[in-house]
Length: 161
Image (cartoon, one colour):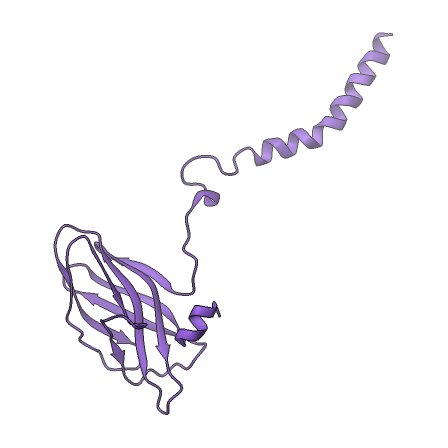
């Protein structure tokens, strides 16, 4: 009788073992504040980065279909700091630097391009539609940030492609 009960318990434990193993291996998934499943990501095609207190969000290069094409910057610049800063230079690899001298007040957002009041045109961008180009934004206080930006059209960006 004792050996039959022991055999049944052993069989039950053997059937539960795979489930217990999976439970043990997945118990840490999503645990804690820094788990990968809790990280917030931004939807969209644009690139994002930071330079000091300046957050660069959704950086894209919009290009028309003229010959040669005109290329404009599309980006949101967020000064999260308590002091004013300034965008002093934009460089796209293979092109001369553009010096926009754009003021960024403390605790403010400036949206550049795509129909907004502020536009920055970058002449001679060697990358065509659908390619990436390396863009460096230089700020007076925050330093520089270099990001790969998609070269697209405003219509493609609005359509998600």
